Image (cartoon, rainbow over all chains, first blue to last red; front, side, top):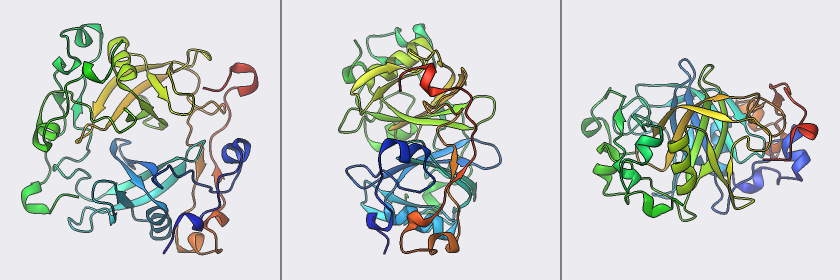
Length: 157
Length: 157
């Protein structure tokens, strides 16, 4: 089983940013952030986390694995629903605490049934922000249609 | 000054996911994750964090503000370098612990001088992952060219 020791430890800032070695900077919980985008449309599908094992499995298999912070388990995206993500390309950022994967998404990424988890827009501008004492007075605008019924497709992942 | 009390508190899962109120789910450090993509190309430019004040300022001004975990300060993207991000659209994800902003990026997003922070690709496949005892044996492939000299443009942000 891969763990943090499977990867070399991050070196100084210069090597981390300009080196060609993968030395992920896991946070205190042993995680890096992962952004998954649709390889065709560029749409951001989801933001999740990977521990060392999820990162190693994703690299080895070319399919996306994550670590659930709420359930505290490693999970393969789509293992229950079949909505897997085939990774077309993986990138790592300057300080190696985040990865970006471009994926071919089967059906949909979001457990609510939408293609992307980012199905609500936040209106911008001073009037939006100052329309009430609470910024929550801002009304989100729904953008994404459901493409499957989450009640029949699978348990939440 | 905006703080967490500027936003209503997250309600139950149903409201969080299907409601039209912005109720960000800040983590234990008071932060949400923010992904910034290029509004024109769809490229992921950077992943960073926002506290309540950064989120409120971004919404109010239409320019990206973040919270630096390492420096522990609120910062406006480009305040030193001039490399600001004009926000074209903001989205929030299903559980409201991440936002996605589509931005018009002046010059470049990365302090290393590249357009995107994700300027290195991670090779995929079993051979890459098993080529050595360390996954760090994987050799990153550089993709992004520098578009400015970080030594003259500004201090690191």
